[in-house]
Amino acid sequence: MVVEKIYGEVCVTCNEQGYLTDLNQWTKDIGLEIAKEEGIEMTDKHWEVIDYLRDQCKKQVPLSIRKIGKSGVVSIKEFYQLFPKGPLKISSRIAGIPKPVSCI
Image (cartoon, rainbow, N blue to C red; front, side, top):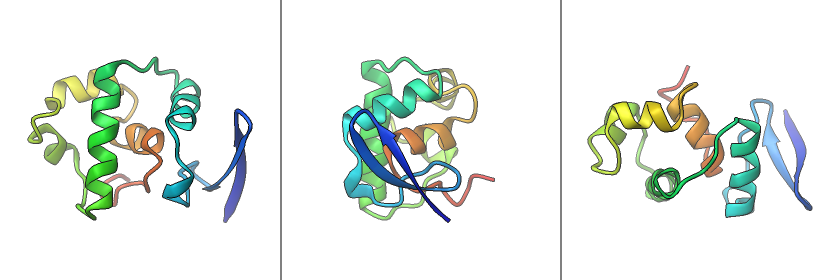
């Protein structure tokens, strides 16, 4: 099921879990709005992770917490500190990419 959501003045399409269905609709402003919904105040380190996730998604590289921990961008511990309530799910949603298959 596809749902339309409005972030700021932009209408985007999401699936029933709130993940964007069209990667091209994502902007940094939309990412900020999603982060606010998740209760996350974005820092440069958050954006570094988001940029990494988007880059990996464009390359069609499957994502996992372990892979992100080995990326050199953040350690697994830091990843959990940045996105405490489910780091891969939340960061993927903020990044405007599909929910990784490794997430339940």
